[in-house]
Image 1 (spheres, one colour):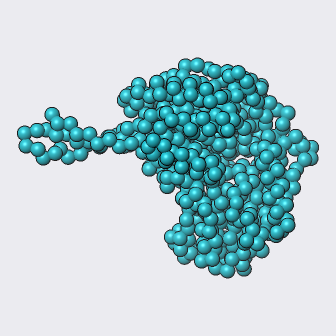
Image 2 (image 1 turned 60 degrees about the horizontal axis):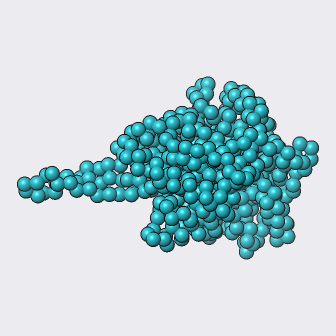
Image 3 (image 1 turned 90 degrees about the vertical axis):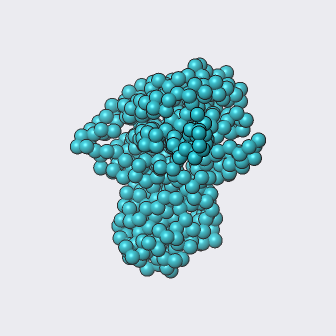
Amino acid sequence: MAEPGAFKLTYSTMFDPPEALHERFEAALAAVRGRLGAPHAMRIGAEDRAGAATFETRSPIDRDWVLGRFPLGTARDVNDAVAAARAAFRPWASRPWPERVALLREAARVIESRVYELAAAMSLEVGKNRMESLGEVQETADLFSWYCDEMEENGGFVRFLPDDPVPGHASRNRSVLRPHGVWAVVAPFNFPMALAGGPLAAALVAGNTVVFKVASDTAWCGALLMECLREAGLPDGVANHVTGPGGEVGEALAGHPDVAGITFTGSGEVGLAIVRRFAAGRWPRPCIAEMGGKNPVVVTRHADLDRAATGIFRSAFGLQGQKCSAASRVLVERPVRDELAARLSQLAAGASVGDPTRRENWMGPVISAAALARYERVVAQAAGEGSVLAGGRRLTDAGRERGWFVAPTVATAPWASSLWRDEHFLPFVLVGAVDSLDEAIARANDTGYGLTAGFYGAPGEVDAFLGAIEAGVVYVNRPQGATTGAWPGYQPFGGWKGSGSTGKNIGSFYYLPQYLREQSQTVVE
């Protein structure tokens, strides 16, 4: 995103954008509002398929706003999409990799050219504020560009090896990474473009063809991303898009015998089931699963508490806590526990919660009625077992009465509480006192997850934290976000333990080869 003054939008720079960015978002929002409620089709091969039945998406900001109508896909639609992808695979895989790179660079250009329009739609559908929405769309474009860069820098992943020392023969050896076939991409509601577009870009530039599905709550964002790929000129069948319930469409896609690999982002329960399924078929198939987090922040008595409170606030309550990277556990040394909790509670109490398309609002609604009910259960548990320091209520006053708005919540609970262990995906953070850095790290690691972690303390304490923490993404003394804010090319993003199945991070140097398999080639001339 080119802005005046050489401004580059990332999740770290989004807090002080130029005025022109707001003006362009406002214009795009007005245009997008004029197209609400339109029908959208699935894309299967060369066909725009309407389906026999439809469902609609409504904004979590105001349930009276119908955003779009979408096909209620079936297992038959998945079969047809996989068949179309299989038919397109050989021509696409055989295409010289520089041609694939050129098409996907064009996709990045199209996404970036529509960044304001796509962000306005995302803000309405997901409930993200305008800066987070703009950030995600720009991140999606940057992920496409990143994987194109990686393909080019690695020469298409072809390495020439020494010739065999065979007298009288020219024996040529090389190692080639080649695509698998049809790749499934299943993306969640909270990052419906970046967590669809990133895997799509990697799979496609590697030479695979794709069938993708986004969570039904954000079907509009999925349809808009598909429009960008078509506008970029991808051949029919190379990228296919299905919509509908996870119980039928998602299950049919994950269980299809002709799917050669899958990238899934979602709950640990579903992700682990897919990992096991893909390991137990006719042969093991690659499964890239990102499965959430219960992310800790360690704060020592030597920390800058203003910086810590700001970073924790942004990571705990950005996108209403509905990020797998959200800060949910704060482990703070006892002498500064009360002061940090007070500062964090003050920030939470002062948060602007409302329609996130409006410039003045930083927090929007949670995504659904189910999320609201989960929030109310978690708050009740915190009040019963410990105490609620800030928030803890639904917001239903004028302007928020038809949405799923809740107050950002800071709470305490005894260490034995399940609140410290379970991922809630809500604007809810716990604060607990520890007696030492060693105890804080031990409690931080005492979880089945290992996605992100944050630290605030003295320079002499940093190495001890970095050397012992069990997480794939770590931030130290970062006010922009204690546990959130990774950007392609700046902070590779992925989890350890139950947070990820591969140990390779999105937007890193090691991610793209997962969509390829090695073939050793020897040709005697």
